[in-house]
Image 1 (cartoon, rainbow, N blue to C red):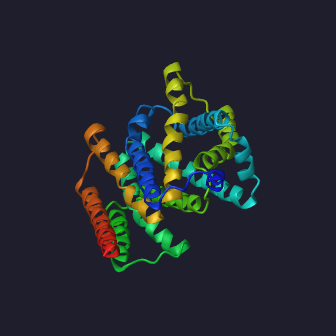
Image 2 (tube, rainbow, N blue to C red; image 1 turned 120 degrees about the horizontal axis):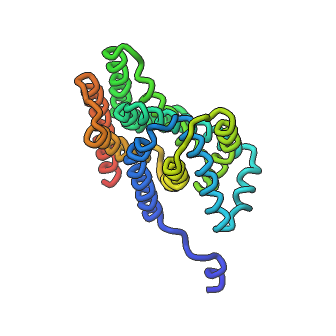
Image 3 (tube, rainbow, N blue to C red; image 1 turned 45 degrees about the vertical axis):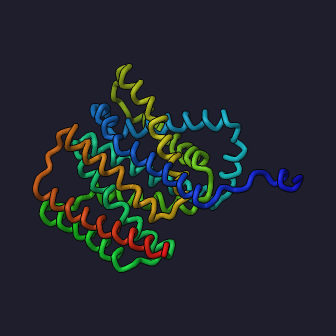
Length: 302
């Protein structure tokens, strides 16, 4: 009995760990799905200003959390590893780019474009898992990837331009997830370091390059960006530590579905024929992947 007590409580079963990951992931993507409403309320503020405030307030909020939990020693230990630090710097750059592009998309009334990017991100995650994590693709997964590429090609051909918003959002967030997957660390600690890395640049940008006057109400709304940003990212990091990259890609359908609904039903963005056909091809790719995932799980249980 003494030996058991000294070792602490037994670890949670893998099944419970998996379900916790699903809850964290679904919660994160649900919050991200309604994010356009928040940034739409700030559409009169420049995207760069919103991004800088988001970085600074996120760092402050997470710093308070780490202080309250007395975990600065763990954060320092994480930062002392050269490998971890370089991975977190890379992740911070990818995250900042993703944030900026998404804020720009909402501010310029292109939430549908942003939702398309997050629709194809699961397919991008599959491809990245194959390229960098040596995850083998099954035949249906290859078909899904091909159809997603075809959807982007169709939109580029019929709209006379590369759909850079969905492509860049999918790539930056997919790569961010890949980098964070290589770090089996506490999500709060990792996100705090990512924000600290970006904070000096954000402060300098606000101090010397941002000339936009902000009212008290706007400033108060911007100050909430720390909490709004940190909570789903912490949940996302916690889910990444518990789930396969492909499973995270599956859960991400929640986010773009909500974004699509918000764009059409609440923000009144037009859904023209070309865009609808592009979405339909993308949804077909997702359906193929979902079918493959379900059939594979059923086969594994037999």
